Image (cartoon, rainbow, N blue to C red; front, side, top):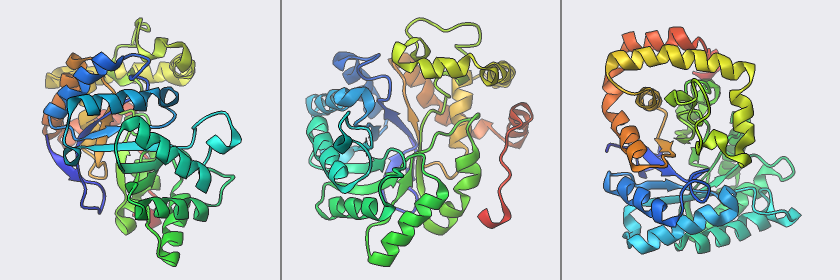
Length: 330
């Protein structure tokens, strides 16, 4: 396993990490989660991603119990949570000072740790001033409850506002962003955030490298039973797959599979290696539900070197969706 800096910070994160969205509670119980997390840890993965919204907190409870049962030394792994969707009450949502503090305390209890290595604002809150959010995160850093804070799916302009406020008032600035990034979702990482990478050294912990499984090829003909697309709570993913754009994406996956076959690797491995090829990616979050899937995904890192200019150009000719950066973003 190779390790990359989280942006300009000194925190070294495994280039492949493990997340619990959808998997924990919905697809993996505590026993299976324990086996998968231990396997990931033994393979060199040191970052485990979570959020208060995942299975309404149950995902964090499972991960916390697993970390406790495994007895891992706290200085050998990185764990995160995200704040925004905490409950149905108006005081259990958003990025106001109260909810950020309450959500952090709750995450610490569920994860059974004394501090979070990373804490993300899960989405932008347009009902709360960015200054209030930055000040709340700064307080948590000073209290030792979190080490690094960041954003998820924020616009570049809103992230810049957070940096500006932090610099103006001597507060802790964000260190990372967690955007969706895969062959079908490229604009934020390859266009919108370019200026932030160069000016602020923004780190990224990218999610959905396989586009919720579409880029594995398993949905080319039908929706397998037990897959995340088949879960009732994730109908929105299935709706996307069954849309006109979804059909176009499947056609592209079929063509991309031929490139993977020529390289002697799986479609999933090609997709993850493609993400790792981007130097602005700090870590790729995996969501495997079985040891076999996890091993296949981890092996992707060995195949990045196969993606030379010729292969990347072949992929580009199929995707035809490369964002064109604005001159002032470079």
